[in-house]
Image (cartoon, rainbow, N blue to C red; front, side, top):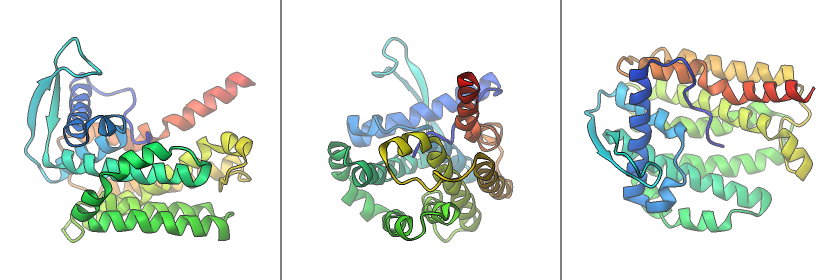
Length: 269
């Protein structure tokens, strides 16, 4: 359930370089804190979170350069703020519950769950609110998917509320309400887009999917509603430094998998 909060074409060269530096910064922190288990769970979603929070809270930036396993021939720049570490920790928390969900649904990924689970106690101690929200959401979804399988928007909101807590580093500060609203809307979108992308695969495997019997027009309406709510909440935040990149993700990047699916269907026809 990752990979939807990504940038797309149209950014200026300066912004592309900034985006890559934050992505590499997140990778750097994941490697330093969690080793190989961290770097293989790297995602653009948490790069968005790091950039959003760093901009919103005007966090001081530290730049560095290094070679790594992914780019061994030439040093590359990376950028860090205090929210890069927060994003890295949230990446590991989300990855653990994603792995747990895979084990529950398909019985696969037990080794990945075990590796991620080693870091869970420390993360839960450091972020009890976010950890509890994700744990509760997974349990609630497990029940709701059995009792209300034909209510995808309700299921999406259950996940969205937990993602709202992930996007909110301080649960009580001035920006908490707007960040929760943004996170909830993005979480709804991610849940629905993930279900839409997995329809064919889940039908073939006989797995639960709340969108199996929902037509494409209705799916688009639900996605558009979540994306609209996300953009409304996003525009209330006083952002400036990374605004072109963040807007690119909110208004265009999140739709990339849907557009790709449409092109593939057209090619099949």
